[in-house]
Each structure stands twice: as C-alpha cells, then as structure tokens.
Length: 376
Ligand SMILES: [Zn+2]
Ligand SMILES: [Zn+2]
Image (tube, rainbow, N blue to C red; front, side, top):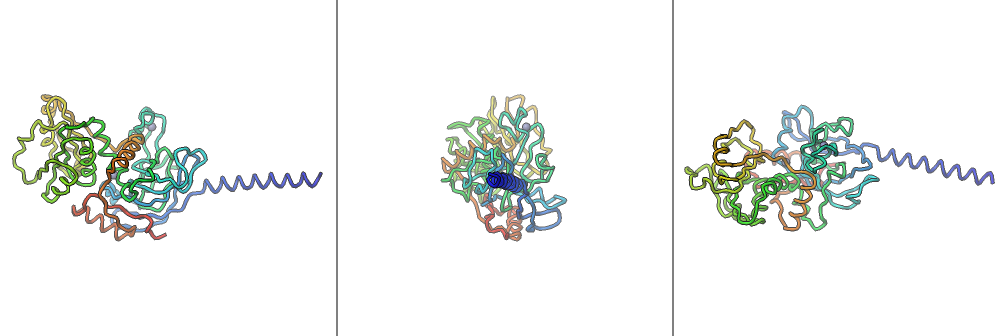
C-alpha cells in the first residue's frame, strides 16, 4: 500500500515537471537568422530572437519574402533592421488556443503583426488604423513583447499572433503569393473602397509592383484600364496584362482629351509628380483618385477649386485590414491573379544587387527572396 502511494507521488511529480518543462519550452525565445541593413552599410546576415509562441501565436517557417519599395526606408535605420512585409511560409508550431491554423498549413504575413484588438478600428477589421498603435512587421516596438523592435520577413522563421496570419490555400502558387501581402492588398483595398465595376473607365498611374497588381484586379472586374507611366518600354506588359490603353506621360504634351473621363484612378507612383494632372482627368460628379504610392516629398498640392467645382474625390489608402487581406488572397488564388516575380537567393550580396536594380528602375515588378537558401 505504502509503495503504491510512493509510485503515485512520483507520477504526479513527473507530470508537474514535464508540464513545467513544456511551458518553459514554449516561452523560450526562438533563434532566427535574417538579412539586415542599417544606415551606411550593405545587407548582412544576423542572428536574433523571435518572441516565443504564445497561446494565440503561430510559428512560421518562411519560404518566400517579397521586396517592397517601402522596405528601402530601413536603409536609414540606426541599428540593424531585417526588412520584409511580404511573407509566406509553412506553419511549424501553433499555440494552445490557436483555431485558424494547424501545423503544415501555409500562412501569409503582411505589414502588421499585432494590434490592440478592441478599439473601434480593430473591431471593424481595420487593424492598420488601430487607435492604440498597430505593431508593424519590422522596425516597430512590439508592446506585447517587452517593446522589442520587430524584425521582418527576410528571415527563416517568424512568430505572429494568429489573428495576423492569413490562410493561404494549398493550391496557391506559393512562389508568387508573398507580394500579394502588400502589393496585392494595397491595390485591392481602394479598388473595393471605390466600388469599381464592369465597364468603369479606370486609370493606373505607375506600372511597377503595385501598378501591375492593380491592372490585373481592374481587368478581372471588367473595367476599361488605361496605364500611365514615364517610359515606352512598359506598354507591351501593360497590354499583355489587359490594359486597353497606355499613355507615356513623359512624352505626351496634351492631356485635354483625357479630361473628365475617369471613374477611378489609382496612383501607385513612388516619385514626385503633379497629382493635379490626374485629378483633372476624373469625371465630374463622383470621379475618385486613390493615392497608394509614397512620393519622397509628400508635400504635393491639390487645388480645392478643381475638387469643389466638379465634385471630385481624392483620398489616400494604407494597405488593408486583416479580413480584407484574406478576401484579397482568396480572390487572387481563385482567379489566378499573381504578381510577376523574379526569385533570388537569400544572400546579402543578392539582395544588395536587387536593391540597386530597383533604385535604377531596372526591376520588372517584384523580386522575391527564396528564404530557404539563407545560411543557417
Ligand atoms: Zn510594402
Ligand atoms: Zn486597435
């Protein structure tokens, strides 16, 4: 009798110890490697830690990470930052309370990794406008994890709250999914906001990573698409993706035939330009211009008179909320809409070279880094 009791005590102690070990294992930070950059230097491989997998978190082995033009901002950072907010990978671990994912699923992560979850914007699924501040995927203090600065997707692994993971269907063309997480949602969101319909006359200003996604969504919706850019070279691609008309704004002298003709124009231009040219092209009585590109000098001016006298609308749009990102991803996969990508290896010098080419305007649409090739 005595020895039986003794065995039971042992079993209980062993159980408690193993539970504690398990909990400890789960709360340990996760070692990661990434390609980082800071002011005055090139990319280099760094070791760092991801936060542990909490009960509502998932761990993702990153397969591919897209290079977005806005990643370039980290070149001015004081300390090493791993950029990248176009991420897709495979779920390798799930917290106890996770319901959206199971191990082995594909998951995407975009520009955000956390938010308060209860303000009016979070409740409406517009986490990008969180009143208590959105935690962005890199370079952002993560108040849910001791204020640690977040590191992005040019890495082998990431942990994220499941709410910010996007379910990627198994049949998706996984190599081309990553850029949907920023370029896709950034263009999809205003197209939906402005409720573009079949036969609407629409324009896409700037035909790069964002622009070529906008063209594909607009063509798919049955709109009549005109593309504006500053070179003749992009015309073939624009028309191949379904644009009806291409306008080289650098060589066109007179735009008067385009005045008052567009229901909707999306500007993805990341350089300085005069937006009034596009405002005047909007139809009077409801034409809408959406800004999604970020010119370096943001002090662009718009004449209130031109808006007021003709009831034209101008607005800006920042990425999209999580429910909308899921909707965009499902739609893109179902309708076979993907970015055009060039895959590169996860070597610092390869990423440096890609940045140089993007700077020189020599990239066709999107570079995607194969993160499985990073040196572990
Ligand atoms: Zn981006
Ligand atoms: Zn919030």
